Image (cartoon, rainbow, N blue to C red; front, side):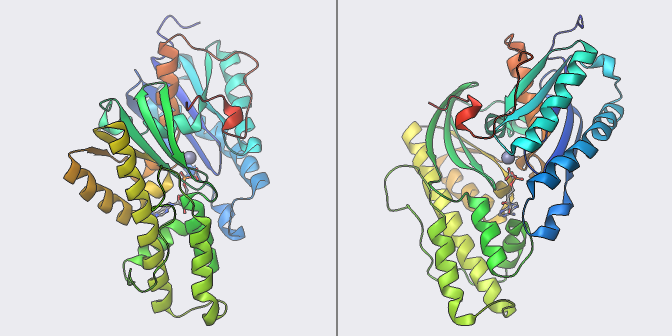
Length: 346
Ligand code: KG4
Ligand code: ZN
């Protein structure tokens, strides 16, 4: 066992979905290196193919660990602990990271800690913005999740709302597919929306008229399908695609912003942290910035590479837990669902 504190130099590993990422985090705050490899193979299939994702993690991970250590200028013997995503996510992808972390940790004789992917997203803004004032609210918007969470302190959470069906990113991906565009759809529609008319189609603002902080995006996706029906199948004229993109995005953004403001008011929070790939969306960032400024709320949006899946946020949460004396045992395992992941969101 290293004589240094376990949280001193944490190797973070993230393989929960289709990004392989490795980070070296010093003293819980400084990223010495941070590698993220997006798996382009899924673009060919218009969506994530789980078997291909786990195979790619298997091929990439050992090389990326070597690369991250080299970039940080450290040797394996310098690492004081390993933090690895163990839930939730694609189980075949998660097990690659977990098995690697356990074997590497055992070989080096250092502690390993399993980190919840959603908890890590809640704190990813902290890597750049420092600790938020508590209570704060976090909006996690990705391909698999749309959650509003009250963060009362590190490790103390209260769930305010979530999607009842599709996640926000999933809605972007499905609408892009329906328009005959590529994958992932979010960045493509974000770009196209800039040249379209946001009021061309009156798409619903799902659940905005209902109390509470839950979301629902599947009806919006259906509304897009209905609007496209008279136009047949893709390819569509550029102007139609741009108008659909702009109108769809306006509905998503208005809904996310409306519910986030409701959550802030409910909690009396003075800070809103964002996480997840959809937090890269330019319209969402701009709308949240305007609303938060009006309310005197600090908006904490990570830079795009820290919004998406990354090992930096895993190392951050791992370091905090290690500092509290927490460790995972040899029975650390991958869990696919949030419910099975053990994260207590109150
Ligand atoms: O967090 P992430 O990288 O992976 C997980 O799903 O965990 O998020 C990916 C999702 C995809 O659905 C993608 O379409 C969406 O984030 N996304 C965006 C943008 N960039 C990525 N959605 C809207 N606007 C964007 N600029
Ligand atoms: Zn994620």
